[in-house]
Length: 359
Ligand code: GAL
Image (tube, rainbow, N blue to C red; front, side, top):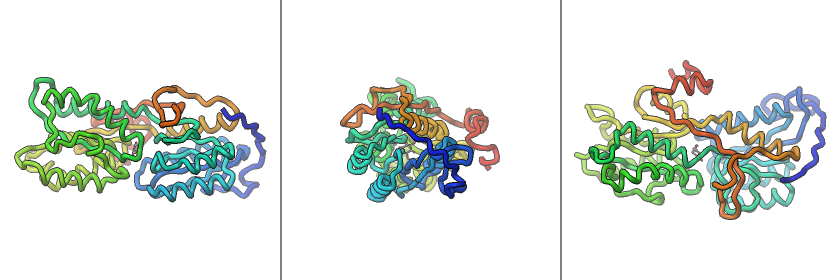
């Protein structure tokens, strides 16, 4: 652990020219310096929520924030990190675009004694990652596949179900964890023959979706359907993330699923994005995995603040996340599977969305 002595400069944000929206510290708290928050993209609602939650929480403690979105562009994220480092940001919280591409800026951060927290996505191939804030990513996949088993009615020795499989972006460490978790549940059905993948594409490398892009997934779904025997209908599609799920569902609908007695397959998801939650509420998407971004932000803020205060950040996992150079100490939250039956209790009663958001 880095033991940085903190001089809490008691300068009020207002006195330093800070005001709402510029990432300045709140009026009642001291100014503890600036935290660089590097987020991957605004394409997906969740990363916007993650970023906003962190800004709010850091400011409440007296930090300023310098938050940058990289538009899924690796080089852009690298230059954003470099500018945070040269601007003297005290710590970096990074949701990486490509988990293996940040060695350079991380070395520069290390040389300036700037701690680095990997946010939701593990940063690989670097010793200069201090902590990892995420969810139990293997369990995410287990929950998605468990929903498939229950909702598509998979049974050993039962009728044959047909599935196509999708995974996330290969440059994101999480994608492999989600897929492996799902396959740990689906494997016995695949080997036992009650689950069949018509395309034969069951390997991670065959089913990844570049940059988690729903359009890329929609195009692959269209290719799979075009190549399939028309008399064969799909019972389920493993989808790792809501944006991908919506792309898949759109293609399925264009191919006649969801009308004329041809039921939509059971399609999974992740992130409880509002557009998907609405589809779940209407019985279109079967489920999603809810990961409370307010809680994840809390974990990352706690890790950063403790590290900067010379205290020991709280972790609950010190063995799972080997980044190729070291095992990164992590705090993993628990994901929750949400379908139509528990949507209201979990998401509305839990304050994540309002009833009126559902439309
Ligand atoms: C992953 C993340 C998922 C999902 C996906 C696409 O890294 O764990 O929850 O957000 O990226 O953004």
